[in-house]
Length: 175
Image 1 (cartoon, rainbow, N blue to C red):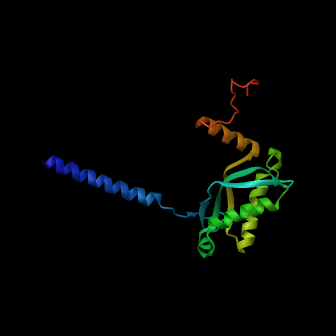
Image 2: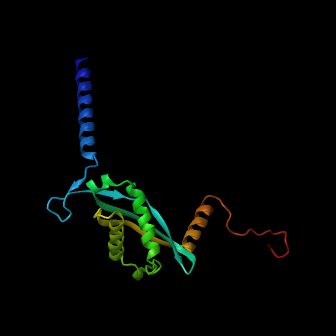
Image 3: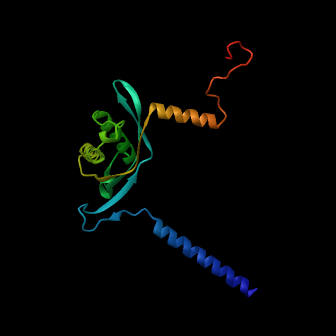
């Protein structure tokens, strides 16, 4: 009986210790940059997958898909009246639509460093302060309309959908 009590106390102690350590280590604490040029504390804000249509010659040619991570000043984030996610997504759309020279259909047509710098500068100009220090790219893709259509058809075929015309053997032409 004493062995069971000791074992139960041991399990409870280990469980409480594990929970305490996991909560203390998992907290979303801002990163202190010390003597780096960032001057203070930064918070890293991840965006969800964003899909921006690429319009050329008045038609949608494809979609720019991205996931970005922003290094932002913690104190300045607290002072924003607008949610940071809303601001970031709006600025990505505005930046990409206002720069028609960015051609995602050509790999050599995209200067990611220029895009990051331009996006950072446009966000900081909009808020009137140095809110964003760096933009990191987690994922960037470009899909043409044809690629999206082909993928949709493949998914529908895999689920039993009919995408191809069926032929009827009873008709003279075979259709």
